Amino acid sequence: METFQTLLTRELSRALAASGLPAAGEVVPATDARFGDYQTNAALVLAKQRGENPRSLAQKIIPHLAVGEWCEPPTIAGAGFINFTLKPAAVAAQTARLLQDERLGVPLAETPHRIVIDFGSPNVAKPMHIGHIRSTVLGDALARIAQFLGHDVIRDNHIGDWGTQFGMVIYGWKNLLDRAALVRDPIGELVRIYKTAHDLTKSDSAVRDACRNELVRLQAGDEENLHIWNECVALSLQEFEAAYRILDIHYDIQRGESFYNDRLPAVVDRLLKSGLAEISEGAVCVFFRDIPELAERPCIVRKSDGGFNYATTDVATIDYRIRDLGADTVWVVTGAPQLLHFRQIFEIARREGYTADFRHITHGSILGEDRKLMKTRSGDNVPLREVLDEAVVRARKIVEQKNPDLDEAEKNAIAQTIGLAAVKYADLSQYRMTDYIFSWDRMLSFQGNTAPYLQNAYVRIRSIFRKAGEEFSAPNELTLAEPAELNLAKRLTQFAETVPQVLNDFRPNILTNYLFELANAFHAFYEACPVLKSTEPARATRLALCELTARVLQRGLDLLGIKVPEKM
Ligand code: ARG
Image 1 (cartoon, rainbow, N blue to C red):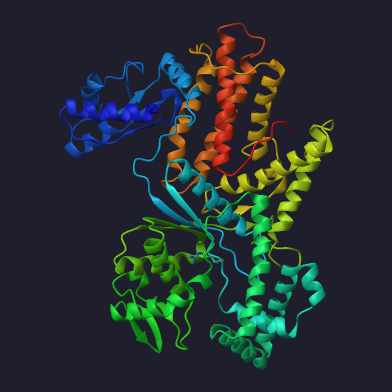
Image 2 (cartoon, rainbow, N blue to C red; image 1 turned 90 degrees about the horizontal axis):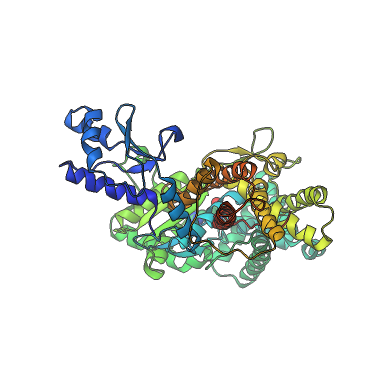
């Protein structure tokens, strides 16, 4: 089935051709509902190109628009917009079709791509902290949506399991390790030895040398150091996996930085041979002299001490993703500080002849109430596990207040669902580049653009059906008599138009905004229109609107990695 937007856009193209005009513009949802449901600026665009009057051009186009099946006669507004208002019968028919469609009208992508999406990607021997929420949750949502649209998605966790920090970790392991603490709290102890060693290197040049030495030995394949490294990686992975279980995050592959180790020398040789890289002050660098912003910023792919770095690994990572995994699209989700790095890496890939679509999807930071980067009182990053645990504890108190009669196990399960949803949704409902303030009260509120508000709308609908005590069966026909019914039904038909849009600029907040407006439309409908107490044919239509709203809320939230409870 096709969306109204698709149908109207196609009809517009046909009408333009029939009026002897070139293709221009498309039909988009109206910016102001008073003027209708959809609009196009085609006449404005063409008038400008041709030096004609836009309103009279619009008048010329309108007679060719054969949209009577779906719309009232199109009107002209403002400088020359053409507006479309849907007919209630057309909305009713579309809504009835949605009830029969598993995909709720969402079309599959015309050209499916093989997309490698690199997100989360935490570092070994460092704890996952609150900052990892953004890349993890954003990447997961994008992966879910891409998959739903029919793309072949490979989720890759590019774990930072190699690099200079291991010199310090291994030094710490050999000199500072508290075995009992390691058993009690492995990550805590790993972080402690890493930090202590790190601090020592600042004041003590002997420790600095010792750490460098441990790193060199590790890279040269020293058995003892490799063994320690292996153990650290395994312990960190356990911690990551525990977080992923709680967050319901899944990866298809985990190719950490170490996976690329033995490919690095060849990468540098190749870049040198092709002339893309050159030796400068002992280091191997790629210069971008023809790109003004990058002219002063070469990318080092082999340091002057002969060591490879983060950039070398990422060049090798591109080879692997394109050649071995067969990807035609690569998305990397990280914080904004890596903008320059990926600008360089993707530029190198293009110069090497890769034609894949490379996208660096960046995000802003999470701030504390003081508008600074969120930290614990002692100035450390806030551990992710603590945040997730606290979310559930806080949600549990709310469940206790709202629904004290549920049994304990049920309350716990609901608290888990609400708490994690609140954290994820608070993140996804922000434009990804915005820094936002982490606020428990706001994210757990039952009012406003929050997960609990949407979950509550879903739960309310489920309770209507429990009260009715009947299985839902979709009516063949709907009658949209009340404005609140019509408004809700129109919103429901827009789900299919909203989901694909998220991927245009990787903005899940387009979907959260839509779901919030849908829940608002549902609440307005619920206030205005009794459901179970109404008489036929209104009753069947209203039950159908309830059911479809629940399905869209559930599916929409699922695409964001958020679950719905049946009660709360
Ligand atoms: N481990 C990195 C970090 O924590 C993120 C890795 C992103 N992916 C990549 N291919 N470099 O900043």
